[in-house]
Image (cartoon, rainbow, N blue to C red):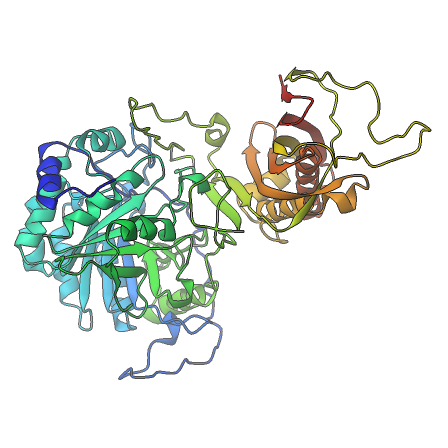
Length: 617
């Protein structure tokens, strides 16, 4: 795809309309009246060139100083992005439970006093809050606060920015996921592309430099627009920030939709070989690049492929007053409840310090991720284990748009009804294993089951692992041709209401049962021949393990799929993976209940091989 001249791109952009935003939603409420927890003593990190000691309350056990605070001003949004929320919106927290303006300023004042020097206002959409200008003006008065930023979808930006600038707003991030107007309107279910572009140009006109444009890159949706976005930086002082698609509540995150930083960078370098890397700032989340002669620059937020947890300096306060020390974590503590209970400043600091002290070394519940996706995906990752964990809340619709070249605009996939049947947070797990090197173990035997099958050979009425004298024997596959083999197996673990609720809320004392079961399924796929004596070793190219909660049956539904190219099938690999994942769930929950049933372990489908395909009806 050739990059278009920026003038043509801008003209095209300004003639029609599309945009995307990042919208927050209600979070699970913490228990009211949570007791004040003493912050554990820990050594003060080296101060380096800091003129004054940094607050121990904002320094975690790994020495990370948290000087950047993000405050959500509202859960509301004036867009309805397909991959973020249903068209009718989401259930909102009652107004009485949201932070008041005075509470926001009280907390901001406390954090700044302890060393925070940058505050970013977010949402929902922060610019729909009526007193946003006044909040910025009040924040500007805080001694020691150097930067006040805002992240916005841009719809109201052009109208409000002159007032915001006078109030003290110093940095702007504008979310824009496409430059194709029709796609914008389809994604967000609203008009407004022209307003977003007007907001970008207003920011440039008022002297903001750079104006940061956040673009979440999603395979099948907008990865074909990378060069168009970069072309905008030729004549405009923009910092176009390409963000790897990340797991958030409700977006049904799938690795296949993620375009990695390295893949995006490779696309840009093919068009602009002269692309130069810029020095990285301390605690920056972005890898910045610049094309010589261009006014602006491009950056990559590599949250998934190359996380920046080691230098993370960010904390977040939600619209209802919960402190989150990690964007990906479920752990939250209510500062609002302590404020309204009359907690002193020192008591609040102890609560904050205890939360910061519990912050994990890296993404609280995410992944082991290295470098390369399944062979079917065009990416630059190689030999990687991908484990994705996504907790769904019922307030969000789990949808993702897929737009295909040369075709019409399809409707978004329907929401899985089982994820919407409970008022508790819903959780979904998916894992991918890709390897060219590790030998895996499989069996060519085919299970007998009601199925639709096709192929040149009928099912055999002879056992394949028994010789003519009735003794066990391994099947000789040496003369069989190599073909692409795929198998899917499933299992159901009936937990009962008590264990199910604990898993659903991730409250088991032994830890995260779903994540452990995922890894157990992956390990089982790798070790099948050591568990099943007559299985063959083959090289797996892909393993995927998914676990979904079924609230109607108080159950976890497991699905394992395996892929390899070789002379023998992979159904035993898939079946072993699903079965061992089920056993791991039992082990995690047995202290709570032994009335747990593992059921319906079965082959769902297989493709490839002389006996043709199998699909369970």
